[in-house]
Image 1 (cartoon, rainbow, N blue to C red):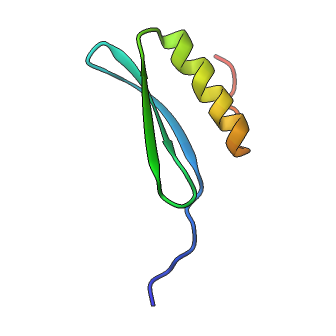
Image 2 (cartoon, rainbow, N blue to C red):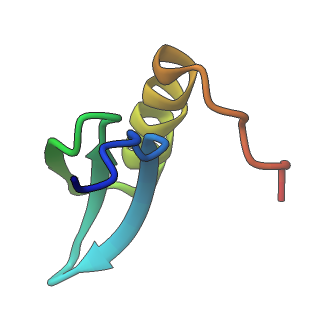
Length: 61
């Protein structure tokens, strides 16, 4: 039987084709992405999603 242990959720930010993309992977493996024109909007959304998922926030720059 395959290991069905859930993986931890993740929230990532990347830049692609002039947009900032927030990628969210949930514990059940579902993946969601949302694109933003401004980096600050992507960062704010990612922080909110990390809080929603109970993840630690990255240290400030």
